[in-house]
Amino acid sequence: RVLKMGKASRLHSDKARNYCQLKHVLSLWQLLSVRWASLLLTNGQDPFDNVDPAYTKELDEEQVTALEKSLKHMDVETLIAELYEFVVISEDKEKRQTRWSLVATLASYLDEKDAPEISGFQDHFPATILLEHACATWRIIASYNQEGGSDVNN
Image (cartoon, rainbow, N blue to C red; front, top):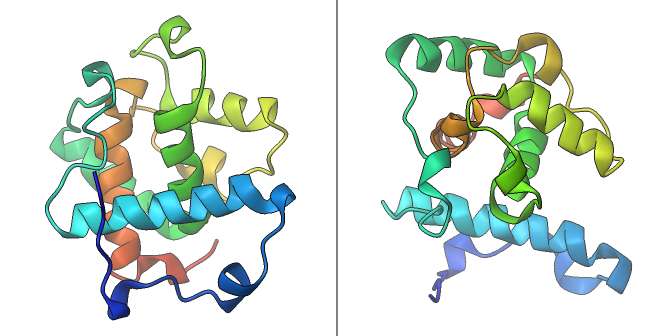
């Protein structure tokens, strides 16, 4: 699949365009992948068409409301990037149960890869959202971020 990006949707980071070393590749991949997935979402396409269907269950109305209310207390930019990486490339998916808590499992994944905590995530993310809701959750968070909701931090 090829994503064509017009001038308006190009990466706006001079730093990324002008300077990237091998040690920055994972971060750059994460940045570009999330940008690509967000553009697919904006264009009505599914950024998770290759993800196991077990992770694609929709949230119910109460879960959506709880998630949207909680996002104003979190670092949404980091959450989008880490959740996307977790869903798309993390290993050991076959060992995880889709009924596990998304917040607990993602926090454990971040701890295993020695990544910093996502500000506000463990304190505010709804406990009723499970791994089976991972893709739907990412879509809601990405839409929230696109609407400018990520300005509020804690």
